[in-house]
Amino acid sequence: MSTLTSSKPSILNQTVSGGLGVLGGLWLVVSPFILYDGYKDKAAKEAADTATTAGIVLGIVAILLAVFCIVTENRVDMFKYRMIAGVSMVVMGVYMFLAPELSDFASFKDPTYNLQFTGAAFILIAGFVTQEIYYKSKR
Amino acid sequence: MSATTSTGASTEVQLSEPRIARFLFTDKRSAPLWLALRVWIGVQWFAAGMEKAFPGLLEGDLQMKNSWLNNGGASLKAYWQGSLAVAPGAKGAKITYDWYWDFLNMLVSGQHYTWFSWFIALGETAVGLGLIFGCLTAIAAFFGTLMNFSFMLAGSTSTNPALFAITIFIVLGWKTAGFWGLDYYVLPLLGTPWERGKVTGGKKNYSTPSPVA
Image 1 (cartoon, rainbow over the protein chains, first blue to last red):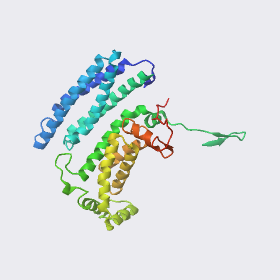
Image 2 (spheres, rainbow over the protein chains, first blue to last red; image 1 turned 90 degrees about the vertical axis):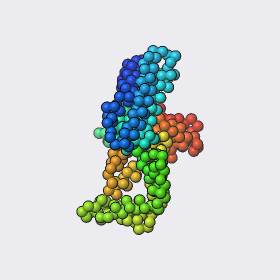
Image 3 (cartoon, helix red, strand yellow; image 1 turned 45 degrees about the horizontal axis):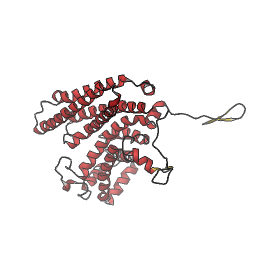
Image 4 (cartoon, helix red, strand yellow; image 1 turned 135 degrees about the vertical axis):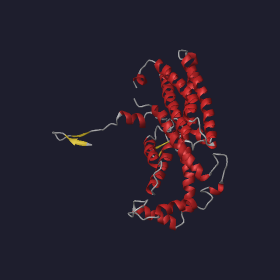
């Protein structure tokens, strides 16, 4: 919490949060093969396939955005784009809550909980860090 | 809270909120936390409401004949009659309180399930949308807790206790829960009954709450 009141920008926030974003993206890509591979029921397999596709796409996008934030963290001219990347990760987190209903696999608990927990992590981490950087830039 | 000193002078003691309460309920920097909670709860309400009002729509196979808007309240009537099957106090009773049993009995006897089913189906959907988009968040949350409370009194547990407990906090965080949502615009425009907004005749420079120092 002290970083929120510090007058100096905290690079650690961006490095750590970017790293967590990469880990989160990797988890989205890998988790379908760990958690919900091997369903035998046809409906469950279809739901798992849909969730897997969503996870892989979202995971790759998250990794790209997080790597971008880490690579450009010292570039003041890229500040606006880092803000956009942070907000995009928050929006992705919101989409992860909606995806089970929109893509019709909400009745299957494994993919639903996986996406929702990961989505909550994206919203909280990307949200707090992006917000902190924004308010510091206003001072 | 007041007290009297030895010289007879009265003193007033003002109790301040703990820092965590100020952060959660007053500081707009808590917005990401509220966004995650709000969307999680809102999706559940939205899905439940859509399943009642427009069954199958989200799966691409709309079946209006099963809709609560289309069956004359039959589903709600069956639910209420299930709750009323055993009177309070008897073994197997779902309802504990006599007054709530009498209330549901009155609704069933008067065939109010015909319009009440619309209220519940569309209400759940509206609560879900309000929470997801952060529009009039606390009002949506309040009606959500009202429905949770009613369902619990009728003997249904399911996810109601968890949703009720979390949504109460969203009601308490009315100033900040919708900050990352449409309330960012709506609250300054509408204001509150005790402090009008731009549209309702309030101060011209009304602004969203600033972080508490």
